[in-house]
Length: 209
Image (cartoon, rainbow, N blue to C red; front, side, top):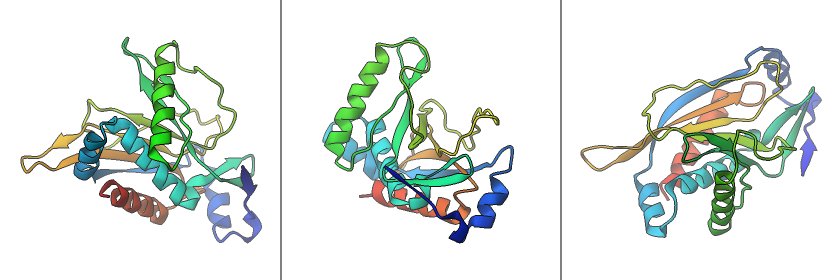
């Protein structure tokens, strides 16, 4: 479900009209996330750490309202729920785009994520299903690389306002602290630096729970 945003009375109307005209309206940041407690919690649950922090990401995305905004033509819509299209790797080194529906209950989400990852393994190619709606984040992990910045391949002619969130290699310090790089790219017509920082702060908060 989604509802149309009243752009005429939106306090960011001018910001939206300005940035939506850009060939590249996305901006982003790479931050370091402390995942010490989250990694321990995932191991205690005997669950995939990837699935665990994907769920935490979706919790944060669905918590910050502007991360649920999407542009359709010249209108902005607010979705009730945002899901994830995560890249899922295969044994042959390729990957496919998945669709993993969000659920606030981790056990329910884990089952959905596990089933979708298994389905990807039975397919070939990149697009293995239809994506009828854009209530998504584009999600990926590069667990082999401890990056300090990240860019994304984009077609400027393809309409897109979905946030793109990526994680890097987990690093363990001599003191035992575990960290990961997280890159977040968002459409500046919908999200500003303030909301981006609020997202990062909230994500770190729930990773520490």
